Amino acid sequence: MQTQNAAVAAIQFALETDEGLAFLRCWNEGNFEAIRREWPEVPVSVFVGADPLHPATGA
Image (cartoon, rainbow, N blue to C red; front, side, top):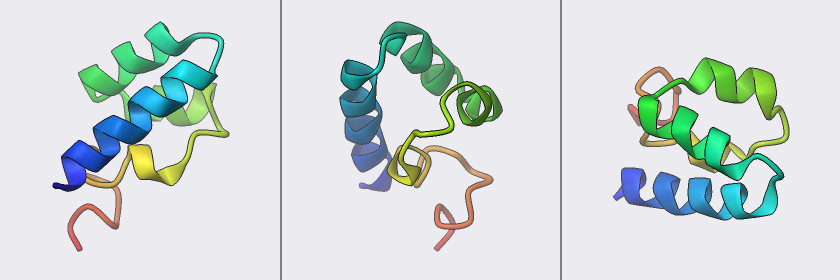
């Protein structure tokens, strides 16, 4: 369920940012470091359940 929530959050963020397609491409490929670097304003919810290294994913 967390991955679904992360996907919804990722889509919502992509719709709000200028480079939404590039963001979604990074998210889909699991390039979370690039996301953190290029979109520092991204909500944490896009990582929880999707990024295996995010502390809340394993909770």
